[in-house]
Amino acid sequence: MSAAPRIAPSALFTPQEWAPFQTRSAWAGPLLVMHCWAVIALAVVAGVLIPWLIPLCIMIVGTRQLGLAILMHEAAHGGLSKSPRLNDFLGHWLCAVPIGASLKAYRPYHLTHHRFAQQAEDPDLMLSAPFPVTPASLRRKLIRDLTGQTFFKQRVLLPLKQARSSSPTGDSAKGMSDSAHDYESIVTGRSVLPFLVFNAVLLAGFIVAGVWWAFFALWLLPMATWFPMVTRLRNIAEHACVEGSADDPFRAARTTRAAWWERAFIAPYWVNFHAEHHLFMHVPCWKLPRLHRAIHARPQAHAMEVAPGYASVLKAVTRQPE
Image (cartoon, rainbow, N blue to C red; front, side, top):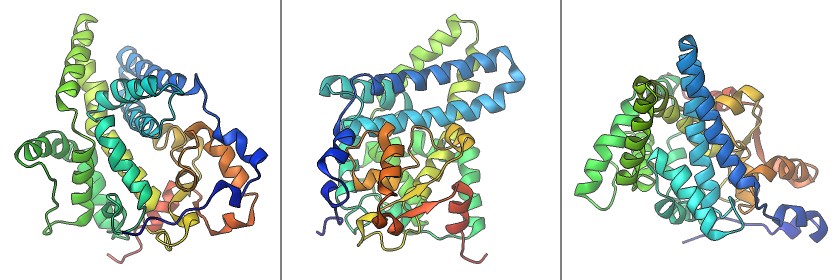
């Protein structure tokens, strides 16, 4: 087993320069969780009061459901709170469980990904290995996401499969990208009963409020459509088609410069700064833009893969001919 290449902060920064990136905030993580739920609540209220906004609200809620997954990821690195108990409470009960995930299951899986990033032992390698693909192949995947087929497979078929088998396996007869998406959902989807209980309570709240339909239109529908699609886009942008990623720590992942609308509808909570995250995984997510600027003031940053936007990433990963 060969671990992914690493660099020490001292290779780029003096102790004084590095010190601000080591500190953790007592309030930033909880505020981010509150922000995510506040955006979801406001989008739901907007959709109820102004029905013609529902398509826009579906995209906003689906992106913040991804935001909950991103904040669960932050908790996996201990970044939501200085208190381990509060960090794990927020990361599991307020971020993971509502989207059907488990922080306890996700943490060892994800830390293994960091230890062996883009090596043969990386459990996420199959997410990036199939790329580049043809434009038609990517379109089929996105259509499956937006029509709920991915959601049905992950939330219904795969839990049933998991109940019959404790070890997920991919079907060699289907594309690696699809089996990878399935594998990820199994690894992070071991919170089925809490997920069902949470959603039952949430549905009861909508019924009491007299808007039962909003649970399906403004919570479940985003989770079944937009959330899987932006999750796939996130996975693609982070590692697909980054050459030299197995050998150079500066090329372990891709950073994508996201416009405001991309941050609102595709990549919330600084998830687009993935190259910086892989270089120094314990830096809190809200400090990644500052870390990005600090690294790019050094000559070593020229080796990093930085895309100007998500459209350019999709162009790069669909270079195969039809």
